[in-house]
Image (tube, rainbow, N blue to C red):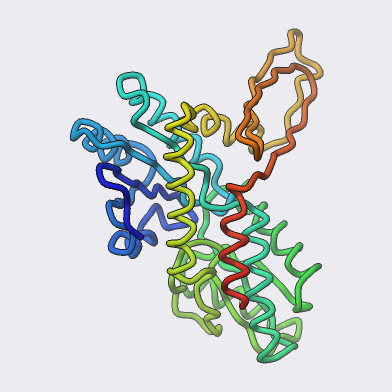
Length: 294
C-alpha cells in the first residue's frame, strides 16, 4: 500500500498486538507508516510529523477488544489538535467484535475441514478482566454458530500456559487442538498444540489499513477528525453502570455517523444504553473476509 505524500500513518496498538510489537511487520508494507503504543511514544511520533508539516492519520489497531487504547490515543490527539487542527485525524478502529467473530469462525471452518473432531483454542495474552471476558463471549459465539463443537479461550502469555489450556481440552476428549491468535500475532508461543496460522493474512490486513486511512483523510477534508468519537470509545466499558440512583442526572454527548455521511449528537441522563451504527466504513473487514474465502 502506498501512503499519500505528506501523510504520516501511525498504527497504534495495545494488548491485541503486544503493545504494537506485532504491528512492526507492516511498516515495510504500508508506505509512510510507523507503529506505536498509546501514550508518550504516540505523542512523540505525531508531534514530530506535525512539526515536519505532515498530515497525520492515527489508526487504532484493534478488533474491538481494546476500547481503552482507542480512548487513550484520542486523548493524546485531542491535546495535539489544539495547535494543529485540520491536519490530524483518528481513523475508525481497524475492526469490530463482529469481524473478530467472523474470522474466528473461518478458523474453525478450516480446522473442521481437516478433522471435524478438532478443537479450536483462541489465544490472547493477559490484558484486563473486561477485555478478557469479551473474548470468552466471542468464543461462545464461535462455538454456537461455528463448525466445531469444542471452542475454548486461552489467556496465555507463554507456552506453558498455552499447553496447560490444551491439556484441559484433552481431558474432555479433544485429540486435535488448533490454536489461533485473537489479535495481530503472526505466531504463538511454542506449545503442545497445532498452530492454525494468523487470524488474517498480512495482505488482508494491509487492504483494511488502506481503507481506514483513505476514509479518515476524506472525513478530515470534510471537517471530521474522528477525535471526539474516539474519546468516547471506552464509555461504559467495564462494570455495567447506571445513573438511576444518582442525586443529579448527568448527560453524555454521543455523536453518531451514518452511511450518508451525516452526523448527529444527542445527550441524555439517567439509565442508558448504547446502540452502535455500522456504516460502509465498517465493511472493509467483511470484504477482506469474503476475499479470503473465495
